Length: 323
Image (cartoon, rainbow, N blue to C red; front, side, top):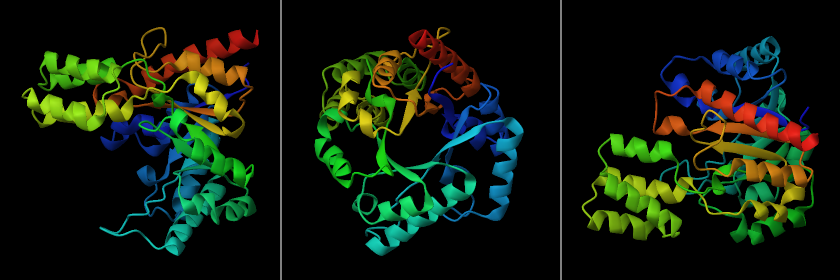
């Protein structure tokens, strides 16, 4: 059996949940159908009415579903939302309180860690609070960020030197191209093929966002085409899987981002198998939350079918590595 816990972030069921085809319990049941003990990552504001506070009613519902479907809580998706007020940053004391309430909620729901974004509050006075409540904080590193360019942040976390502060890389950073599902989705909505091909070509040339958007606009691209140009630089990163070695000792959780896995569980964009090899070789034995994002461009595909493909392929790879 694989040492890593393979699971799902419930963001993957965004289309099913927002169109009322799935309840929160249905989402957890779907995760449980993948394997006994499969991990569940909750995106807190997606499902908790009253966020950042945790109503007793939600806690009871969530815990019942976890017990009923035999899943394992792995990560609580938290948010700093430091600019909740229009045009102003929240005072530092308010930012601290906002995240403390989420750490308490994560503890009550049985999550061992909370996913956060980098901030001075997270890197500073929040660490003792997390230690007190026994909830580890993981800073998500997400495209357009790249591991190769965040040495100062890695050094800050190393300096804190606490097991309660680490990283959660999102695998969208490790892409080989723009996902087919996005290209085809925009073409089906009216973006000319030649403009879509131009966007993909500029991605391979690592063209900055402003430049590719301007070029698409100059070529006659409408707002939709310009949106695709912008998204291409935000969703799919150019990091090399080997760059993970720089932060391996600090990785506490992984977001297994993917977009459209084929029948063999191979994603059209993300270098998934290469990243798994690096993690296995580095001795990572934490959790991986598969995060299906293809519904953003193809609302008709089944998230659960996609998750089954990527789960099966990853499990086979892990078992092969152990054998």
